[in-house]
Image 1 (cartoon, one colour):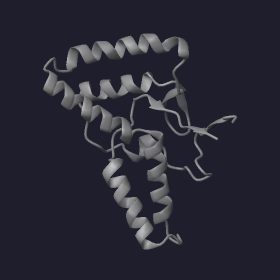
Image 2 (image 1 turned 180 degrees about the vertical axis):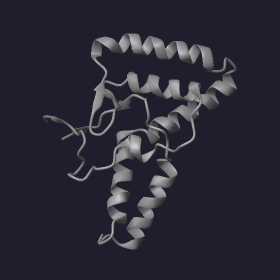
Image 3 (image 1 turned 90 degrees about the vertical axis):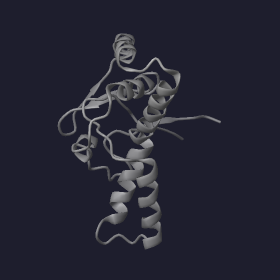
Length: 156
């Protein structure tokens, strides 16, 4: 079976119109440690990563620059994260939740909910409520400003 990768940029199912930086601009700050742990995970993926700039503009991280950015993030982790195993496990769990919230899957789920809630939507109320509960539970609002975001890649 042949697998084709399709990269989704600013358009998901032809409807993606809210940029992550606009959607989450007013959220409380995340600890430097938790943010750095999440950013390290993002950088360790094989997918392209980018920072959202104003409007539709993105700053992609070149593959050649990834090792230096990874080393920079590791220094932040060394300087801000706990050495205590229990505390560090709690920080890592928070980083894992943050990674899920910043994931392309959550971006898609949030966008789907926005479309379902639009006036004139024909989605049944129980479907909308299910999607709202899913987003509330698995995709909390988090800041997307000045962070590396994993670009969505669809396998077909």
